[in-house]
Image (tube, rainbow, N blue to C red; front, side):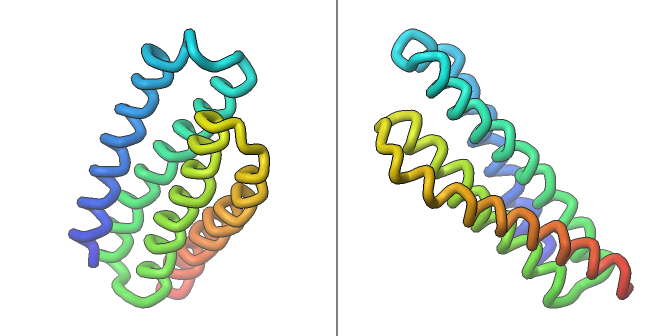
Length: 122
């Protein structure tokens, strides 16, 4: 699992950089400042949690177990729900998508708690 989470973290980091560049160069003239800031928030948390997946890979190699794996899957779910909903909200303007964002935030929080618990119990 550690190799899987490392690969997913690297791919996620790549996507975060690509989406950040897309926002800076392709969306700057198409979105208002508020929606551009929303997109950039999605990119920022996307990158934070790409790096978190690398930490999960390291932790999984050191302290393998279900709790570390749960942290990785929660970070992935959080990225899809949190960042994905902010990307979609920014691009479509559909405010209802904002209702999904907090579930991604909860997944991020749960992932961090799982990672802490795995380290503590190791």
